[in-house]
Image (cartoon, rainbow, N blue to C red; front, side, top):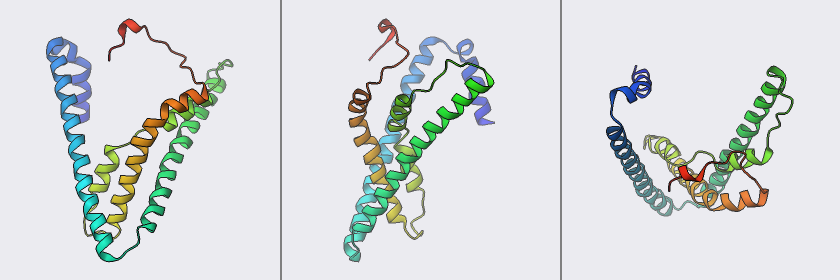
Length: 182
């Protein structure tokens, strides 16, 4: 019911609410999302501090945590690429087979860029923080989640531009610069 109400309100908002109010509401919700995401990152930082303290005080080695985290990062990034190339394959079959559009050809470079720039961040944190403290392996889950977030948010964000240049990727759709805003 909530999703349906939200969709109906979004569909009819132009007739119900003025442009000025929609602009203010959009600004408000952007700030709220920023604040909420910031709080989640603060929570993971506080939780990670406890994890590191428990590892040090328990005499455990950090090596298993690092190995599991590296495998998790590889699985997350690998799954993105499998998904993007799989989606392109389905689109290729649909357009060539069903729509009979022989000129369509998927761009493998676009699939690589989309796979590298995939979704990341706060959802991983929310799921990791929702695991009850009594669950065995919670510290490993929190640590691996932190590593996934650091790699996907920081490393991939920093390397996306060099990757695009390396692939000599050019967007097929160009926007009129008069309508672009910073």
